[in-house]
Image (tube, rainbow, N blue to C red; front, side):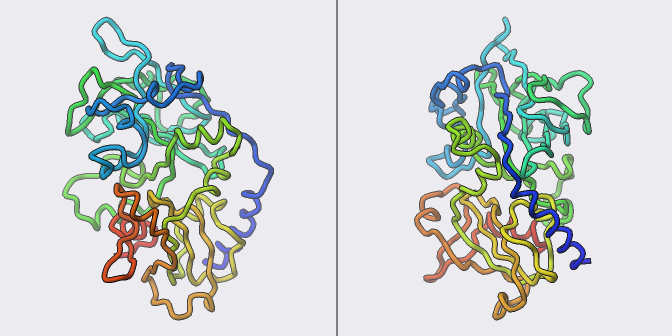
Length: 337
């Protein structure tokens, strides 16, 4: 089975090398600030500190120690009661993979996840804190770029978003694993997983504004080109015969054709923990590695020290080892205990 899968990926690998088709993207709300070239301060909704940057991506809260997976887009219009009235648009052609209609079931509140099979890799977009879902929209539906899928709101579960801070939480990213339920059960959270594969703990976002800045400047045309420009915080080597479903779903992230028998992987992770470059290893290349024991073969120490909102690499007794966020991703990818 592994040999057949390896051959299948060899066949698929050239797809990542085809001539790039530039992404068609629609801003997901009626706010014109991004299209008008305005700064992020005119786009983002502050998260309570008064600083618009707190609505951005990354370590933007609690003095840089709290990670935010997407961006919070402020409303363009409100009704007479002060509620946001913005329609929410599909950013690209895609498929509705998940709709959470109950505001209390997630910190996202009501949310929608679209997957975009036409893109390489087939990224997702997520739209959260919605007041309502477009009538008739259901999982499995094909949606067109610019199609209305919802209305902006301030729904949330477990905490309250004041009406005056209503916004669209918007993410672009990749899903970690189709074995998410196994990992979720193993962690014994004590609560039911109401969102299947599209639970936020199985989703890894990258900065929408950074991608769009690069895209608008034509420094990248596609998500594949954007991934290729990511900076590694760590390089991990692991001896394993396992071929994670992540690789099967995102074969363009494999850096070279698969050997007949995969004996391990060398994986580059960016500072948020996205495994964006996968190099298959042969049995000779994993000599000396203990099975299923990931090791850090390279660490960008300046990046590891600078980005405090994610624990990807930690220094202990003079050596570097996986931090808690990297350990979580490795557990999900490889089924590690």
